[in-house]
Image (cartoon, rainbow, N blue to C red):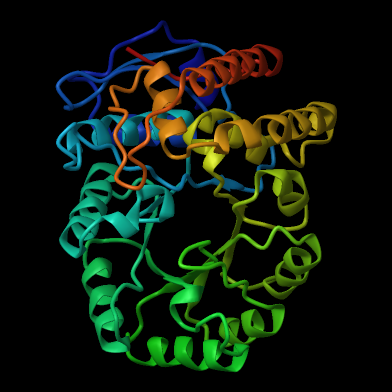
Length: 369
């Protein structure tokens, strides 16, 4: 199927294809498109006959890149849903295989309850079932409030409700307390699929392999976003999920090759909010014996740029995406400070580096016009 499409002349997706058909095409066949999204309706798409970051291996292991979505805002501070639509289409054209909505990158702590729900609902509606969406649900001052909010956000159509580990125990409380509180949450939420997120805020609560094992045994946990950085802990957790439906995603870009080659389902790092095609390429080729030289080279390159793009995040990502053609405003609720001229210059340099990666690896990066 991919080969036949590659032989086609560039074409526009208008009346011939539904939007859902277009998304399926780019997420399953490995075709990266030059996307022009006008009036935030169905995108006009030119299929580019070039090697793409989504081109699957002959025996693909279905590794996934799942972006932690940022939230576009208007100048008045309200959520910019038009740009959010364009951003979703951009991610899909890059080949992502899922979305993590209402997360720290989304500035979730700076959204009210209704905005968190509306934001997630918009993502689910636009994605239209082509790839799964998960979202954070553990908001509320009490256990009952967290249970109620989890049910409400699950009703938006997401595949799993993600629980922040630090929402279930204070810094001074033991792992036994953490486990007990999460188990209570599970008991009160019926059969809703759940996941864990070692979010750095309000503080980073790393889930130990022991707690991880106990939660796996509940058969309710289907998703885990790991931020431990510690490779020994990562490897121990990955050993526990063999033959288990739990999907493990590492948030640490420096762990990309290590985690994926040790059994992680995919990556969910902030670098994907700058160049998702690169993380998609890594997921697709990390175990390809013919591309190991490129894989190791790219891993080193990603580590060099990680500190640069992390400064002033998520504003840095919004600036970078605007350079890439997404009409996103330099507005953030979590930070009122604009980027400095020096920070912009640094990101301009990273953008040129990204283009060089694409050229070396044969990636047709997504072009938004």
